[in-house]
Length: 347
Image 1 (spheres, rainbow, N blue to C red):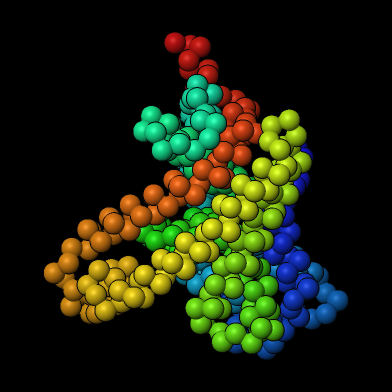
Image 2: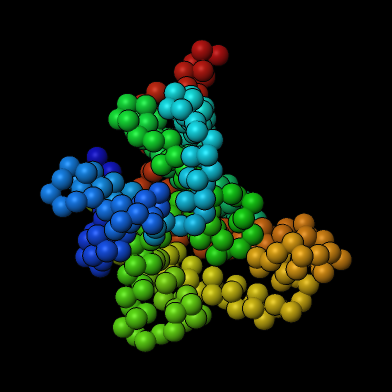
């Protein structure tokens, strides 16, 4: 309960940023109402305005709003074009929720019988165990967030009258994860992407840094990961007593989150330096016509190198994150009903 309440920052931060750093009526509008008078903003002191405001503060990712991520809004537009009715939407999302539950249950059952390494080691046996535990933690995060999201989507659309198109997939395409920047920028959930950008834009403006420059990009990264690291520490600090020393918790969260911007920038610099070579053309977004000039280099080979790099990066840096969560026992938290445990007893 305490961890859940402390973790609510993920939903509160976007609302606070929109209220403190913007004039909502001026800066925000629904993309479906763009071009109308005042971009479709409702009149003051009306129930329509209340609904408009509630929709704004509860949409963490800005789905359907002018500030939402382009890919998220593109996915929303595609879903809207399908004209999926609410019943079919709920039925389509139910298997995802069930699969997430079953996989999460399997992860927990597996983790309970797995020896968790006490520290990082380059010894092969220990390294294999670290990789296995980190993969379990990754699956745990992915399935937990997917399960929560899909249940919320089904309840909102099926019971509360929400629209299916307002619930595009939480995660991006895993095939895009051939750079660290893509993992965080294209694949991961993006709950705090827009508020972090709002805060970092203010910093960039006050420091007179040219927009869209490498320096501005670095500020955006530092801001986002500083915020995320701080709140991850805060949410875990309420349950770490007896498991992890607060200083160790702060150090591990700080190391994991604050090394990500530097890794991303080094990756960005290497790609820029190689921009004129055949190798980089498959790591940087290009049009089909531009890529055709480099067909002599197998795309799959370059992408495979990218995936290998990303895997090694997160195995190395991810231990700071996983070590703390595993020590607290997150991987062993019980499910309401364990299908695997019931099946094991039946056998």
